[in-house]
Amino acid sequence: FNSSILTCLEEYEQSAHSKVKESAWNYYSEGSCLGQTKKENIEAFKKYYILPRAFRACKESEVDLSVNILGSKMALPIGVAPTGRHALAHPQGEEATVKGCTRAGVCMIQSVFSNKSMEEVTESCKGQGLRWMQLQPLLSESCVVEDIIKRAESLGYSGIVITCDQPNFPISYAAMKESKIKNYAIKNPEVFGNFSKEINDKIFSPESNPYSEVKEKMFEPISWDWVDWVRSITTLPIIIKGILNPHDAEEALKHDIQAIYVSNHGGRVLDSVPPTLYALPEIIKAVNGKVEVYVDGGIRHGTDVLKALALGARAVFVGKPIIWGLACNGEDGVFDVLQMLGDELRAVMASTGCKRASEVTPDIIRLASNYYS
Ligand code: FNR
Image 1 (cartoon, rainbow, N blue to C red):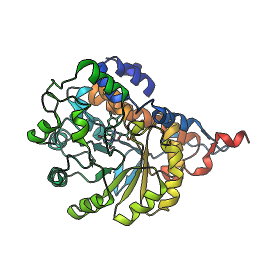
Image 2 (cartoon, rainbow, N blue to C red):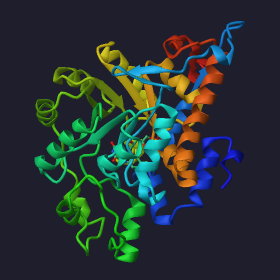
Image 3 (spheres, protein in one colour):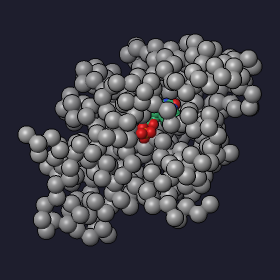
Image 4 (cartoon, rainbow, N blue to C red):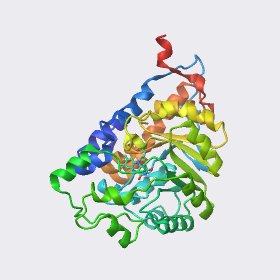
């Protein structure tokens, strides 16, 4: 595989498609229902134009892409969103992902549905990489979550990301079809590395059909009480992921959390919710600088990152592109995808004369609709 011929993330996507099994591809790429939100996440970026000023550009070498998130430095304002089951894309799974992230100097948020355990991930990056652990209520069993938090603390993870936008099993036509056609049984020895055998067995009982059985067993609706409970058992910073509604941003601020992460789960859970780029400004306003705000969803180019920063995000995160890099070329693919985004961002920041992320201000972008009125 010669990744040097790939020049943008869309080419990584095409190449990755040819490398993973169809069922894995469906899992990685599907949006809920008809995928309106998944599509609009990407389209929203095209609704903003960049409006540079004359004679303000600088040299690329003058651009410093690094940012601090919750006191830790990232080499790029681009982190890696939690996505499940990396072993379907590459045999080394999250062990390869974390190496790519560590080399690129960015934060990897490990999904609670990762195939590799936190111990394996930590060992793989020799404890060097910036890692946050993602959580959601699981199987109604608080001991599972407590165990994960304690292990995360002792392994040097520096944040707990609580996902609030996946209260139940999403409507996924591809998964439904697959389970109908194949009367699907999970035969391969796929495991969720952070759970005991007992919990894995509960989720994946031998005859379990992932649509009917897992559906009932995997998710639990979440409440703010649950966030308070997590707060009471850890001193790690808590990041609430999946906020779209400004009222929820205001509510979050009452719960001793350290950051808000605007997301719609890549359009995978509830279709017809707004694209994250459109939701971001209202959240920024509601938060009013009290905590850091991040965003993910549809970020594929340096210009997209610039637009999200201009609207007030401290950093962005990317989900699917990392899986494409992983599927194409393991650790190197993950690294390359992050470099590609960083290189594009450096070029557009130089063109617009922004020497650091904090200089990317709202006045360098315009809503396209302003030109039509
Ligand atoms: C996800 N996402 C996700 N989010 C989360 O909080 N916990 C999880 O386990 C997962 N799992 C997951 C699996 C896969 C295959 C995908 C594609 C996504 C959502 C993810 O963190 C992120 O919000 C979106 O992927 C961002 O959109 P883009 O960058 O994929 O467009």
